[in-house]
Length: 278
Image (cartoon, one colour):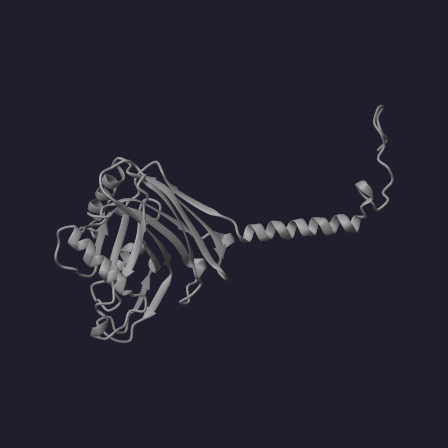
């Protein structure tokens, strides 16, 4: 095309760019830049926030050695993250009856007993659902559960949380929890948990012998209680190591803050995996 009046025609192509760079040098620099961007993407940060409304925490205390637990496991699996933060904590106190639950941790049975005591109860059982730290036996009723969640989410905001995760499956995930507990009476404490979904076990003994059990939101690693500052500030960082056969493509991180004395959960937040973290 002929240049119009006032336009300067482009010079003939010489294979060199501005400053005398050769085309090969330019391509090399572009390749290097693309590699750098890819490296950054591999360490991309994902963030979830719970800062404007209360997000309820749902804890299911369950066991593969309990014949009453599979329906509760299926119920938890269908909960949509975002509206609530669901977690399955497998207890080990049924292991003696014939089947050792590979996801069970003694600390979860201990937490269950502590939470029951704080709520004025005396008996621990499975399956047990706790909503914001309180026994909730009507979980099997969709209407009752929806109403309880609605009321819990409508509470005045008591804490703000932000959860950021970086890392990859080879090196693990680093979770950074920040936020604040709004002015209130009493002490508070925070928790971090790495959970995994899409799990299955073929049970060969015990009450569920012959069954294939499927699980979601299973807590694999647990950290807490973590201190909350006297001014209510929360700032904690922890790296979840790639161990115990955890598949990070099916994992997520959850965090919550609760009253240290009553066990009431004040706020919760969760973050499922990002593509950049796998």
